[in-house]
Length: 523
Image (tube, rainbow, N blue to C red; front, top):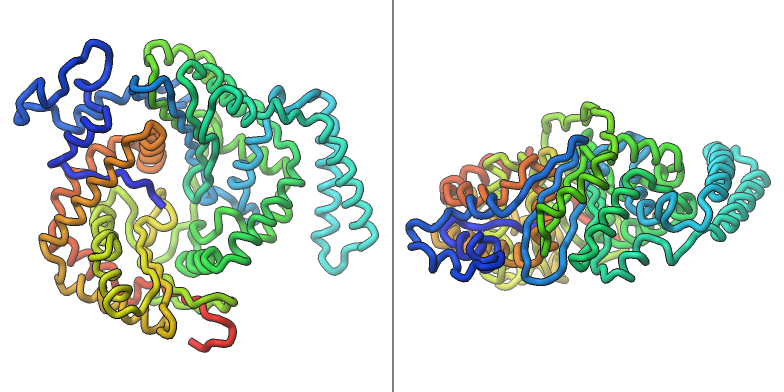
């Protein structure tokens, strides 16, 4: 789901002031705030001030840094985002980006190991034994059971031997924790892989040394043991959890060709045969500095920071430029519908294909999103949850499942017993018809615009929140300034625009519907 970074031009200046982004509110010797320093009519525009606060620095290898000085506390947040996710994986290798997220916590040739030269030899033996085991496993029913057992035992023994070379105290998360790091984590999605942490401001060089080393010399140690961990994660989150199973089936139906149809965690048969060599090649192809953007927000001196960034990240060679080859989704020929049988309460998801940002219709769907399900007075919540009590819950999401390519507007609902998924679907579609007929007032529209303002404030108050938003829009849309240009775009949208978009996209031929029902219940 996209981070919330929405605001309106009318209050944007006040928001940036409260978030500490205006030039008049930060820095030594700046006593007066911007509103006190100049009349409102001549105050700097919000986009000017935010853009003035962000310092861009691009290295010769293409790596981009976005730096914002916020000297309110002696801390700094770093957000390193690679423009690579499951959408970039080849058929048969789904789950590779997610697997790499796990692997890059395992250390480097110097971090997390007691003797890498001896470990390197053992890693080669592990790879060879795992390759032999996987080759036998691929034979399916024709596999030799005795040979499988022998190879599994030999692989297990080698992995046990490797443990003597793993230095838990020297692993990356342990180093960060000992130096005051908080929030060290990572995420992988369809579009991006992101690593983030907050540290004391005097530990910036430690961060640069660790992350530069991790970019150049990662060691995918314990790979085949971690492969089993990911398979178990998949069983828990997708095969045993009704929401995960429904969402996976929904995307697999909504997209017939485009890789957005593949789960980020990967398909089980692909995960089971991921190997270290192919995963390393994927890393070298996609995780170069020219495919990365870093936001650094907090108590930093940009003039001192930039030489440090050049020293550690500048020598990293750029990855080879490769054209992005993604199978385009063919035009729809009609509604797509499916039923998933699972031992769980009924659930429903409805999706409509639409353009991604920065297409104007994407802005409109941000407003439709809130008109339908934001708060107790929103159209869908008020109608089917509170008044008619057809559903226990209903929510919407714009931009499912990613932003690098055209995506979906999705509606999720859980029927309230004894009402059926079919009843809830009919009620939802009736509400959408109301939007198509123009049953949205100017007052309704202004209310949701005001809600977007409040969400923007919450998103910018923390260093980590701002850092995440900067890298998200730089990587996804090619320009972090989308944050500042958004208010002007929203301000131009009226009720007629909302009605037109609803009429264009809320059509049966553009619709995907997946219902989850218990095995004994008929649709």
